[in-house]
Image (cartoon, rainbow, N blue to C red; front, side, top):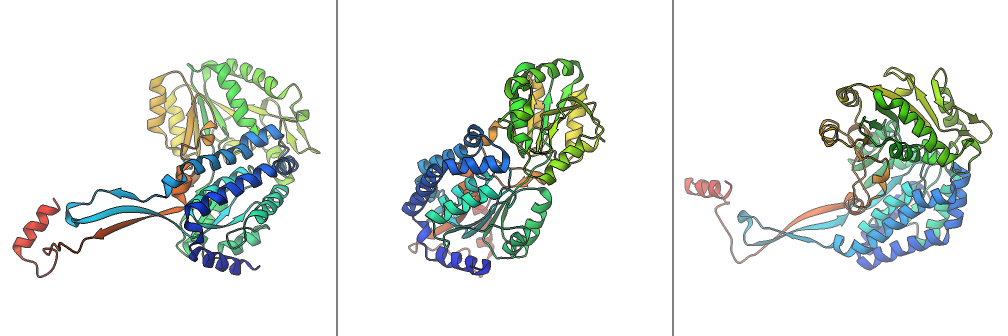
Length: 456
């Protein structure tokens, strides 16, 4: 079916009101959960082919996150769908006033290749729960996972309700030319600008889940051994191809050498002495990104790692020392298993550097000093983050996940996913028994006084 006809068909289906009931939404979520569980082995195989993910990481960072999101939504859906009575203002008395959740309509989800199950199906959970219809456009780079997503969705939902469109950027351009009711995009800042520009032609609301260079700050009071272990986990999960992975470390000069020793220990603990041969280290998605990352290693002071395997498209976990602000590796988001270290003497240096650059998607701070924690949280703008850990805020359905400024627009997960794909209508139902007439013309000085009294 042609894309414009598919969008039209979905609009017609949405207008049939079939997707609005609690039972319909609940059953759709149950069907999605059952499909994921029954296709789990195929999903794991696809993720291994695309990204070299082992089944534990695939479940922890992809499948399990989506199933948890579905469970949360099923538990709270009836409550989320209810209209909320609010206080009626004196100027509207007598009346009933309420806020009514209502779906937007036809939603487009454009998802990336790095977490192709999680970042495609997690927002879909919100779309379904909110009562919308949806077209999914997974990334062509993770082609094996895109195929299983398409197969799975086709087996449980009619295309007039939820459909999957696969293809290259030309297909994406065609999709963006359509008049959707909402667009949810996860990907790069450059493509996000294109999405926003296209959406503006139809005044379509958007959520943009982008990225940026997320700093990881370590002050001299931090528990270095624990910090090293947690940073190794968060940075090298999915071979660093994570939008909220620590992009660079800012560490106090007095503890750098000690931290590096702990970091080496943590790397060996988690990836062994030969990470390139370790099945727990993912591969780079394709040749283009692999070549880009290898180029970043040129003329750098590599103190850990730096090895690579051209056949496997793997790069070992790498630490780069003696990095300055003007180093080429500090220009763009790294999105790979390379971690630069910068040193500071005073925390104000860190704050100034972060604040002269675009607001990051995430910020991480390792400290045991409350005053440093408060100073960073008050001084720096960022999407979300952790104190004394990294990336784990993503998996908490009670927290909104999203960026700020150039790192994104909007947020989702848990209740925030329902809210994202829901328009909240304001409604006042007036009584006909009493008609307060001072609002009507002609206006007199007495009416003016009454109006001023009401509105004071």
